[in-house]
Image 1 (cartoon, helix red, strand yellow):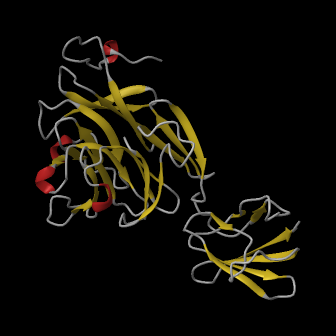
Image 2 (cartoon, rainbow, N blue to C red):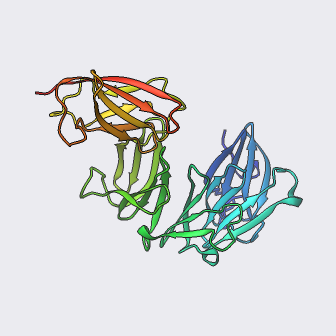
Image 3 (cartoon, rainbow, N blue to C red):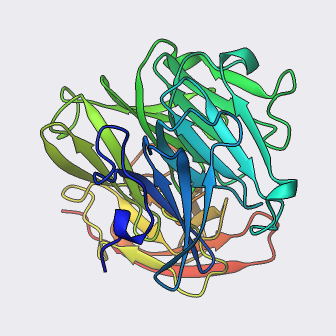
Length: 330
């Protein structure tokens, strides 16, 4: 089915028959639709069961219809990036069809953003990460973002134009810029990695978008010259150690790069033993579902040919998973 002006969606000012939908977000069985530059100032439409059932104008500034991105947080608030230099936050208070209690607020440079917003993403803790034309910010108090100290600037990416942000299973931030991709620690204070044309197979340094497959740990980079994928260790952690997969198995240190230990719970600790019970190596997972072992012991030496037990523990020690690996040396 096609929805257009005939169904009640007003098009842009220049030609009302030309409808520009800039984003769509799902909230339960409801679909929220972001309508750009509508002549009647209706920026949000609500759909259920393939039918348009409600609409909303910008309650903060009726004339601002240049809306480009929509995200919905865990409390049902709609966060909308605009081209006018601020983020709209729309809270219907859980009473969608009663507009009398609706709240609209705006966040901009006045609240501490370091530039005009380009993209927003929620992380695994509920913090709001905001990319701008001059860097990266994090809103650590999304319930009251207008309060002093709620908006923090991320020093590592100051003056970078932020195209997109993705969050992996370990809550790291993958940030797309015109100068490649930066991977930041969960709090944004440390740079974990950087990917560009000089150190990776990425097709272009101008990365427009990032998408993360949390089940596989694969991240996709959309650039101005095409798509690149990268397999990472930051898949979404499991709830328990039902199945621990260890591969490649057997492992050849001289040919294989790393052993992948898959099926971990969050923040697992991994101990590797010989079959006789001697501890070979301690490894901490980065928070996601997988961890890597390079086949070396605590002294940095490759372990000899043999069978090794891999035992993983949850952070509180209440859950345990066991795997087995054969190592073959040339």
